[in-house]
Image 1 (cartoon, rainbow, N blue to C red):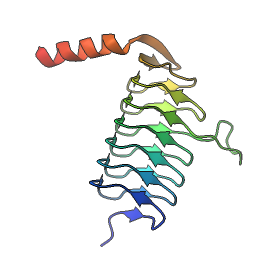
Image 2: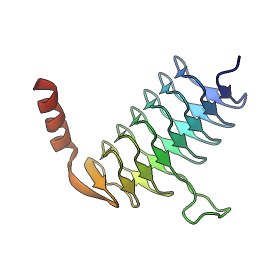
Image 3: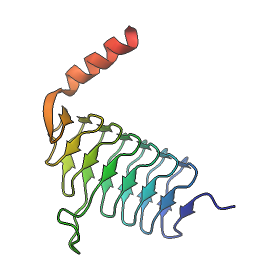
Image 4: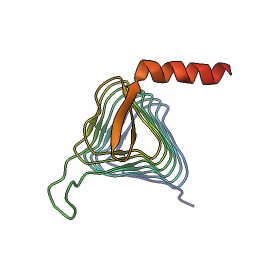
Length: 158
């Protein structure tokens, strides 16, 4: 029984874990130590950096570029067509050390800057600056990554 489809044209790094019923398309490059959850669809011509984790039911469309040490939560959707249905596409760029929480949606052509956080359910329609936390619909900057890390630390210690 086949539980995944992984293209023969995909380049998969060392120690990569791909869970059940996931799809990895042509010309995908996945770095070392990546974890991809169940029911994830990684379309063709996608690059995923080392030490990245993509949770279940995420959709990663063609032309997406995902950096190193990124977390993509469950059911996150990246897009690549700013004016559907159009044959001209542009990918989403997610830089290193980014956290994207559950059910966030990111518009085609957007760059999420290094060390940023996208809150759960956020709809990101424009670039996210480095070291910032965005929330809402449309997503706006609410505080810095330093503030986020402090809140996370307080939560862990409570």
